[in-house]
Image (cartoon, rainbow, N blue to C red; front, side):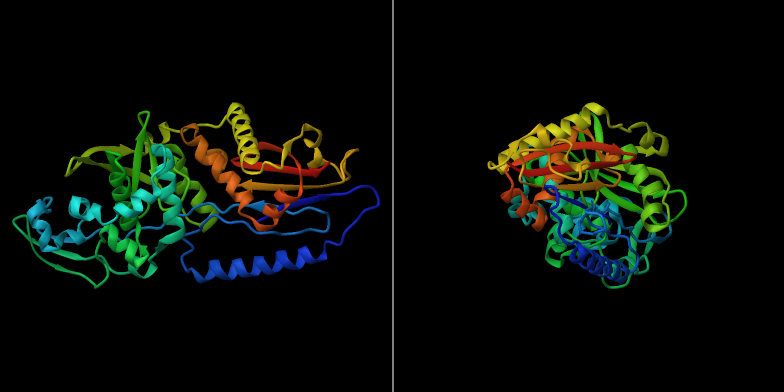
Length: 410
């Protein structure tokens, strides 16, 4: 994952770069070993690390989020089962049937158990709240690979009634609080916890997508919200994605990162609505691949300018020592400092696929994400404190977004 750092000097002022090469190689080896240890490479989280070259150049990328799959569909004998009534949730059969789990795991009683976390994560808007949930999931819940490898349960029915279920221990769909306690789950557990947190924050309805693929029997589930008439998928990690981007995340980006593809065939949408103390679940629609691809926002030069403006504002707000200075706007393309400056440095980060991920509905959240990627990096954080001039610029490179931070002393 390339990282880019460029120190600026006055003439005849050079520094050794050898130590950065060693650090970059060491971190690369550690990261490679970590990813290999994950087995399926299905859960890749955002992060940054340094990597130096002979020239005073260091590049930083963020990882793209990966999505993990649920188990194969349950095997059923007899006729398909109907959704359980509330009184039947006590039987426990719902733990093996996703549609029933939405009803039985999202009761008022179960939601109350995650109220403390919902209060902590709730933002000023639905967008901020949804993003906060994704970041919390990314940092606190691990994908349960062992559970995902268990065989699907066999559900026995007679005349449409469940008579027995044969299943391996640990395959059960979890309640929201169980996922928090275990700090692990599969996609259905993520989806139910995400839905529960948003409902408990007061956002209703929340949607759940039950997704089928053309090229595998393995399915997937994810929560979603609807803003301005458009769905945004909330799937284990930030960012939130519109339907078109989400389709490509499976069909194209997954191949680039994991060497395989999943082609979405259709998705059944469940609406989960909370009114007072009542929670209702109903199937409202089935989307086709064409429906996914028809909702696909494309980033514009206006969006890029807006991101630049937003980043400049947030850097100034959080670092009052910094003064916006267009005199160093081209610092990243120079070998030496312009006249009047005593020291300088350039940091550049490349965010793969974020030109596709970006949507103006989540503009503030994307800007905050870019900012924190810089400010959360210890060496950059130190530079933000020791310099007093800055400039930020944003560019699109294919399906990626590159952010350049120029810093100097004057």
